[in-house]
Image 1: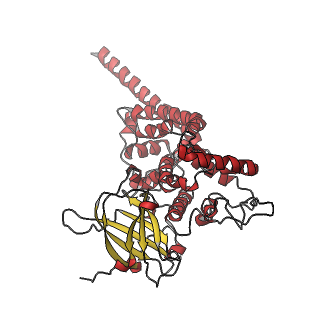
Image 2 (image 1 turned 120 degrees about the vertical axis):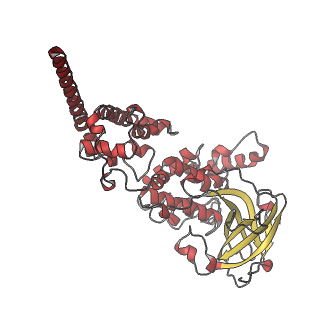
Image 3 (image 1 turned 90 degrees about the vertical axis):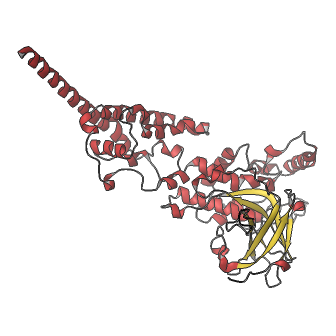
Length: 459
């Protein structure tokens, strides 16, 4: 019996020493491998996937115990299977980045963070005393100050998707000069454009390097625009203007007119300082649908990189899907001055009630022309919020009956905020629209006369 007691005592002592060693080991790992991440002035590998709102060091507290408890209480640690902890999954996300260059650049940093957290979390989970400590107060938990929805909104993949829908989708407005990869020598329709491009490059060799704006992929194009903006020479207009999105070269250049020719018959070489002119002529008009989507995307990008979104309510809807379906309002009222911005919303039938759906399925924006016409390509609405990218880009207008609601910006609301949607105060009337087969393109535009607009009586 005495021998058994002695053996049991020795076992308890060994267990206590083992637990003490595990606790000591996890504390040492924290000081040696986790705290250097916390103290570093360099951003963590989170910047590979996120442009703002989150950094790995925001999950770290000065205390070894509190950091573990915080991760445990937030569900970021798997006590039974430490290797499957969510915090490790988040660190590994960079391995799936579609940007191969970014994966390589951040690989070493990501590997170091993953190994450090893996070793430390495993040691913590092997310490029964540590893992069984009471929960921390909610106010003591570590983590980003921004809600998850804001963090997801700042992901690069979301930004690229928004770029595709708002800018890349309209790149053919810049065809063929700035979209060389869209030219196809086997396509008979492209032969004239290809020949003109060859002649243009021969005449203006100094402009060749400046023509290639849209690259093979949206990711490459976006990176080019971002890099080019960061390297803007003093005095030049940046391609993306973070302070004044509507003053970005990406917006101003296609809104510039063709210049007068010089005495030798050539056009002057366009610069990137005011006053601007564009050898491609007018491709975009102030307050048209392209202007709105370009400015809206740049504004969103500026807010993301500036970390200006603090709550879900701050986020833009980010749910537009560009199409080539043209909606036209003819015979706009004479009281509307030329260049007045107009928004037209398309409402579908509610099949259950026979009435009109309260939420529009699509909208467009244009300005009153001298002929009192308003043209615009439709933007279909998808899901609101960070998951808007799930909306199919292959949208089509189904045949049927629709109701258009028209809003005119007579108070110049859009001058203050080009990304805004007009309100009921701007409502000027509505009219039915019957749609059979609707093909894309201006020649296939569906028209409604302004003379048919009515303002329904209030109930």
